[in-house]
Image (cartoon, rainbow over the protein chains, first blue to last red):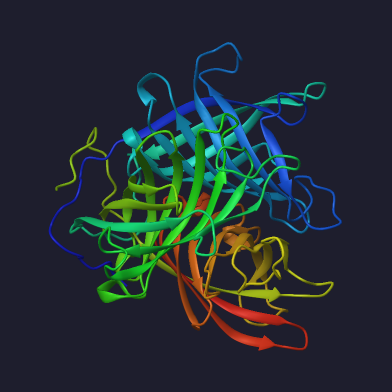
Length: 162
Length: 162
Length: 162
């Protein structure tokens, strides 16, 4: 089956492929938590491995792993423990930029985080502002975790066609 | 890095860019409410500025700002207060058409509504029916708000490549 | 309005259109349930026709309608009763593959299920692994329902450009 023409001849032959790398700073618990459980199945513990638990997340996004590096935005959205066996979390987040050349733009991400793997690949489904019509994939890799503070540093690599 | 060929030579050089404008009629409270809070963080007020509050929405979609204008569908989905500072709402909605030439089709929207701004840009991530393979961006602009009835009229401009 | 060039000349003229068919095995209630209500509007029954009810789903995905056929993955995500009149369910799911040539890949689906219709078309918004950059549409058709066990077999047809 071949895609058929759908209208006037208008298309963009000049697409560019871009790779951007950022670092999310995620804190699971305590007064500085950047993620919170909202609800879960009645009678079940609320956790990433407990089917049906829904979290809201708002992680700061930095240019480098250092918390003192420039912050360019926030990764905001919903995480849902979507596997009966506890393995996977369904993710719908927007990377909301509010600094540097990215300010006012967003990148939209959807997919599943296979929690038991260090390299977790999700999809870039679109974007806004400078990232209109973006498509691609996003990898999340935990590069640091401190159990005492429940702080993680997660490298986010965005591979996109714009 | 250059995108590599992925299969047989099949692509559509004839894409058309389309702009559609509709009007959402949104009522926040009362017996005619078109949006309802479902759940929020334990011990917190449920509101658009309270991190973790999840709403369900079903706004009628009209051809013009007048409530008596032709209704073409409904904007249905989930809104989540996704910013710790109360600024942003994460949005996943389908514009579900059931009238005129659009009947049976949908447009899928994902993104973040920066509530403090009048022009709020989200992404068109796809569509169905007449809008299969749609991509683009969607702006939401509040053109009318009546505090007494909590009724808003929101202009939705859809810029899409089909 | 014509799409403008956005960068270096890099694009893929070699896209392939693919159709894949799988079968979801969905059980609504009981100890083998593959879907569970998480929360709904206060004071309302939790159901697919009750506005505001949010479900989590994790259906096994098989190669054929038989439960003994090869399982290739799971369809995991969130279902939200998003219509005040009870007609529609908003869907955000990932088809998470863990077998055969698809292992490690996903397909991302978003859209609305018009419950009163047998042919329900949603969008393929993206994918990962072998399905990076996928776009298209997905039809869900119930091919079998057993009221005694609340088991449904749902044919999922994925039409995608890769």
